[in-house]
Length: 196
Image (cartoon, rainbow, N blue to C red; front, side):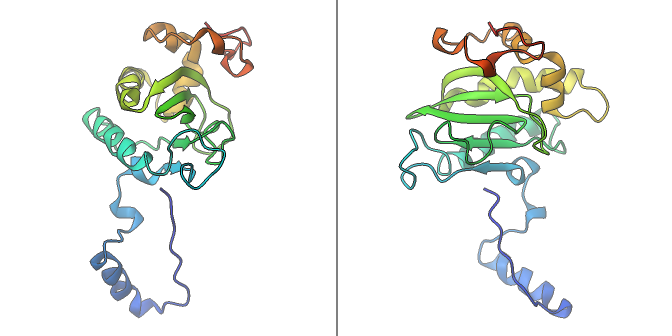
């Protein structure tokens, strides 16, 4: 996700030919990708990183395409929602800053964070803990649908989650945190009180 190829010193008259060659070899331009895919990032994780406890780089492409299908269905395809995934809590792909962050907790399970922003200027908060990879898209459907229906003009998904309060969203959508996670500082809501 978000891998860039830089070709330097290409003459303007050759640009179309270079783009044609890239596409012929299966390398799409960023403008050809859905916004959900363009705004996704994952760390290398397993098997490359010795700290990883879960997949990230190898799991993110399929996950983000499933998310993109829901985003399209909800009419949010033009929204810039940042998606970040790591295979451990170290946060190499900045999962604690994105609109949505997935942090690997064990093989095939992730903590889900909501409420950051695409610019990386606000930390998100823990929404759900130890969620199986196959359940992530269903877990996000409720908040994404509510965002579509309740957002203010120009409000980002992370901004909407932050304004509503992540603890409030957990209550609203029936998300229960494992008892071991309830006392973590990152679970505190925007007012500073412990999360539920």
